[in-house]
Length: 128
Picture 1 (cartoon, rainbow, N blue to C red):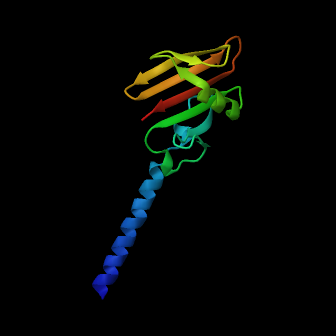
Picture 2: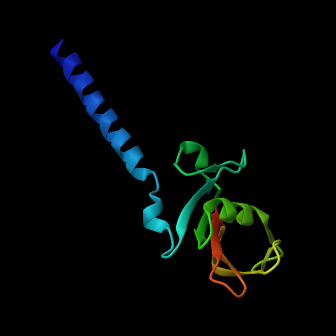
């Protein structure tokens, strides 16, 4: 009986430790949001919804939006409208925006779009 109690206690300890590690693995937007930008969420690619809090449905391929001098709603809408006209060029479908790919790696892209003649800009990162 004492062996069974010890086994249950050991399994409970392992379970608590595994839960703590899983929670630590959730990304914190404060750690990766570019300076000067506001984090505007992850786009769940299956449903098209934007989420501000991490959940397991966001694992895998990702699209993250950021805003500067604009609302997150506008930034997310603009990110959804940007078209890829062939690497490394991105084309904003909204007139007056110019997009530049800042960084590129295998299955990763960091793009900034600026409204010409103003400080209004949005940024997005995508990858897998």
